[in-house]
Length: 316
Image (cartoon, rainbow, N blue to C red; front, top):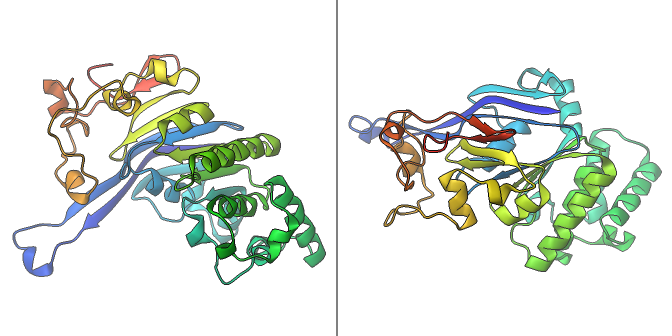
């Protein structure tokens, strides 16, 4: 359904022009050689800490940003070489649910106008047909028709996220890319939104890419899980018994059964990327199992059991 092949997204960090004589520009490798395939009807989870490249990867898959290199294929078509009409169709079939619904819902419009907008853009139906579809979709996300006259400021966080989900589903997409869809919500509301998302995925026969920093949530919902760290996939495995099979030291740290090296600061800024060399493992400074060869070569993803891939010299 959707295939990402050897994708790179690098950003140049430019210094003050007067300082460049002694400090050359650096490159932040937000996505660094990522490859995976999402099959029809699958829930594919992507987890990692803040700054691991998850959202940058999502934007590249949605073609909201052009990657430095690599390929993205949708149903066999190269997304990065699509023309304008193909991109419009692609964005109809591959829809996002963003992390912050507040910033994606126009506060000046009422919910009805917000939901009608994508139908207008794609010229779907007359006004009566559009409002019929909007009413039906609100019912599917457990909101009444009265919400059509409300503005986003009159809704709770969970209700705004449901409106965002309804907007994405109105175009009958084939793939949903949900970037932290439960972030900032209360635990109970978060559980309700996730359960609703999975039910709608099942009812509409969608493929779902679920991106989160919450390992428990992703492990519960996903058929397969990719663990990202500093732009790279550290581990890729099935979700059924993911917690028991986890092998990479970073994954085990996220699960709470592994430790990092002591006194190493957990940074989330540019500098940790800048001082990382291309050859060495990106997790080397935190890994309690690092070996001599980890300083000279980053391990590639190796299959250690059927469907279970790990990028680690100490495991492979």
